[in-house]
Length: 403
Image (cartoon, rainbow, N blue to C red):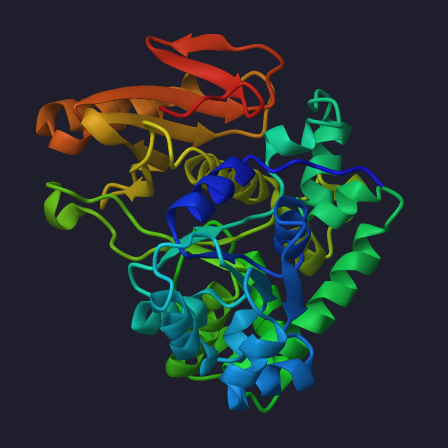
């Protein structure tokens, strides 16, 4: 099977030289364990996915650390919260020896809470998402045709689907969803009906790329608004859903302040929507699916470049009371920013750039410090970059470069 190198691996190795512990968060099957075993081949490795091992780590942390001494890779560490206090003691007993504990977790909020309580200042935390456009292109040609783009979107970015291209995505995502519901959802909340939660997931998929309206979701699923809030937290905690906040600095009350909701990976999104590879170009959801695909790539670039000068980049969306909307704003250091519109077509025209022009004019009048210099892009399927309007360029995801 083909091995796909991850751009994050340099950052992980650097962190292991600078911190006693390193934690790698991310959804199930994003390749956390495989990557860490490849980077740290001599480490002891143990998974708390096994209930008996998790019970040992939780009830007898000292005995667990004697059985699996450092340097050690501990997988799914969130299943043993009691272990973190003992990791702190083990680290403090040998404070200057770096990279002794390598941890993974597929429940971000739980991991962050435990780390914040016990290992603050002793651990570097990173997040591994599914394969990026550039990582897939290591062994696959950059997409050119609609069918090639459709394959990328429908297959998604989970590494196993690219290591073994004979693996049927429908079968993979059916199994993934079943495992996710049984393990992570039951672990995070006391839920009485997994069927209702799965229905909630599928309804969320139809709202991908839309402003979050909890009351509408609650009405459609037939549950209360507090239940919807709890379930959304579960999807965020398990890295399945990302909420994108609006940009409203210095623009007062004209801005809608509710977040937009996106799935983390388009493969799972297509599965939940019942979309096959041949349906990509004709589905009415293609606009928001493409937007989701672009947003995932922006997040991955920020994560991969966070040790470079681009560290500090943030992503927002814009929508005001006049219904002016721009898909993404990327703000970086030194007042640099990018305005981004997502268009599924191959050759966008001036009409596709009109919102970028309007927002750029607003920003120039307001002169916010964090966006003193902005460039504008339409991310689309074009084979070659070209100018759409004054200082607005159409570019493919493969050629796009963040500030």
